[in-house]
Image (cartoon, rainbow, N blue to C red):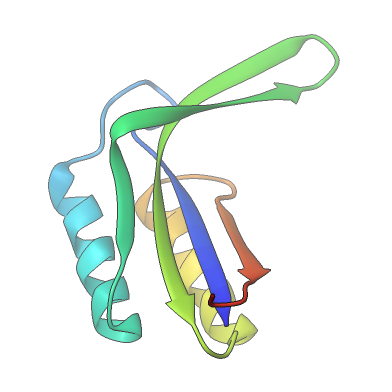
Length: 102
């Protein structure tokens, strides 16, 4: 079993928030594809990373999680690229972890 997490920004690079309809579209597509989804949207997480040697960049994000028996890397690559276009990002984090159901 795999746990796949998507880290989605709340705002574009100019600080303008994305419409809620965009998140609902992603949520619904993932729920349909994987039979369910967990969303962490109440308290946005904050990402911080360095660009270059001097600049730190901050981003508020929401996290979407799905579980899948098999990890279809090609499907996820295409989906990530689609999301990068929708959210106008150079790259988005989509990560997978192998998990054991207890």
